[in-house]
Image (cartoon, rainbow, N blue to C red; front, side, top):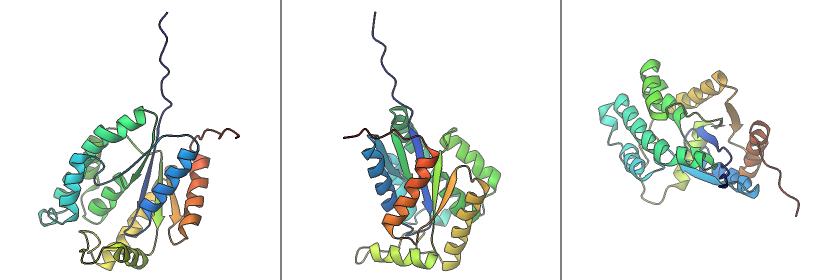
Length: 225
């Protein structure tokens, strides 16, 4: 009798959201390390980007080359990048049983192009439905930080002579509205979203996030040494 191949355990999908300089990529790496310590396979990725084709779209978006065409054109480009990212990287990783941690996903588009770009919610929802085809994060961390602090952090991490990107260069009013947009999503979807105080030291922030993750998603027990 032929042996039945064991199916990999189902993967899990986590996203990190928030304003500029909130520390999403640092937290993503910390969570990945903790998950790997539990013997889990982790796929770290980001948006816009995450796949070769999507990274090329990212370059155009962050350079501001799409901005003159308006918020709807930007939304189309973000969703085009997302389709390739989801199809070529996220879904295959989840199918393999990996835990996918993505720095930005649908909530960024909802806030940047929806709330701030004033694209009608029904139009944005239709684009989103095509792009993700039902793939929703199980857990989303919203990293909440005063925009003045976040922009100062973003400025410090830029290399000498490097220009601000398309979104960092927006007004402080824009970034305040951005912060509120993320908090509004968290309030509307508490079963999925957890708000974290991104002003905490990175180690404390990572521990707080880990406690939330552990309470919401199934983790294997670490075997004793």
